[in-house]
Amino acid sequence: MARVVLVGLPGSGKSTLARALAGRLGCLALDTDEVLARRVATPAAAYLRREGEDRFREAEVGALLEALGADAVVATGAGVVARADARDRLRVERTVWLDAPDATLLERVGAGDRPLLGDHPSEALARLRADRRPLYEAVASAAVDTSGTLEEALARLVEVAS
Image 1 (tube, helix red, strand yellow):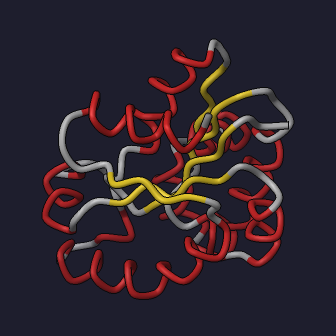
Image 2 (cartoon, one colour):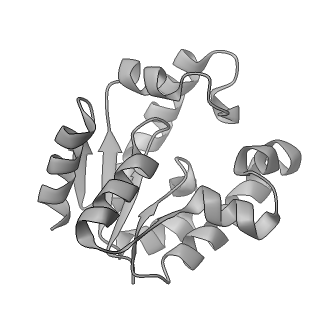
């Protein structure tokens, strides 16, 4: 069973903090976007564009279940909470919601390949926050502010994940 599962909006630091926390805990770090990409033989963003959000979310749940089979810190895709079956599973894991102010998230995602942020990332992020906040709250046993330095965010995460 996974030691810790990280959820949160794009740019919240899930992948970066999963690697850092896994190093601290001496276990694997898994990213469901990478697991999905391996399973479908294409990058997650390209698969989302090609197959649409419904098929992507279905594949994402499969990637989540695979990742949860390992003793690891699991970084999830930002929208994994959109599906009820994923939320049901996340509720029984040690799930931590990572968050930061929108300005910080937008700075971090920069020019990255984020199809759901589209041409107006600020508006899209605000919409995602409004839609997903209650879903993150429903699955997480703790929340961590990831603004500031990596070391500061990691210290806060270690405190709630230990």
